[in-house]
Image 1 (cartoon, rainbow, N blue to C red):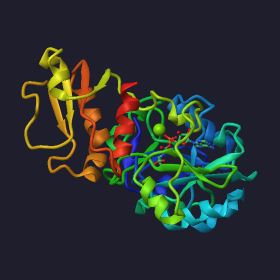
Image 2 (image 1 turned 90 degrees about the vertical axis):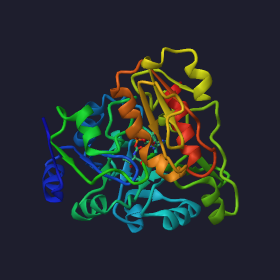
Image 3 (image 1 turned 180 degrees about the vertical axis):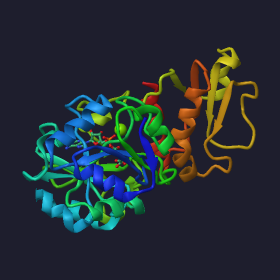
Length: 318
Ligand code: TXA
Ligand code: MG
């Protein structure tokens, strides 16, 4: 059993020792360790049971720190980072030798981001090193958006969970890289949308080559809950099941569309996509815990952060 608390100094003490701790960010909770120390990074992979070919995001305290851990950052990425940091935005840049090799799983590129969660920022400013931190879930499971979610999956494996309350964004950061032609490639959808990137660069970011897995987290089944997930019209899908066996995830409205379902989670009663994103993983955790055998989900409007929500739903259903 690990301890959960709000003591940043306690987290600092563990991290200085080379231990790993769960930390809040605005997107999802991260499982953090010293990104310059291989043994700490390996502990992260072990605790998550994450395959060692899937690299980790490195969290830094400020835009200025990015150059400390990289050989080169394409100017266009630096411009985007300066615009969206601190915030739910991650760039790939060529790493230098300070970043421990296991962090990038053999890639010359490191993923960098400055989180905006005040506790995460205070923690990063208190440490002499950056923090490698993937989402604090077991490999292939739903990302945690509360300290309680982390405890459910990892409490026997880590000494401390820094509790920063429920995550305000709720879906993982947008990840971009710059290709050989100097164009921006969107590797993972998040709260920083393609339209927001276009505002800065003047060009629509490219979608990743579907034939290649560019970020290993793009593995289709990356966000799967334990029960099978289907996406479609709730009424049509529900007709095929015993209602007491199904959990439903509905986008909006005050009343359940399937009144006798075992569980209904309404992402945002008033139909707000940001609220829906913030609640998505928590409701998926509840659906899983309800004892239902199937999760039926409605897609949300495919605009803005809705694209990231639909992306996570489709991965969960793969
Ligand atoms: O919002 C977030 O990004 C959260 C919080 C904790 O910051 N972190 C997160 O980490 O979602 P994780 O490990 O669950 O997802 C990181 C993604 C993975 O898909 C991984 O493959 C990709 O980033 N990634 C990391 N480093 C990479 C690299 N060097 N090259 C390509 N993809 C990389
Ligand atoms: Mg993850």
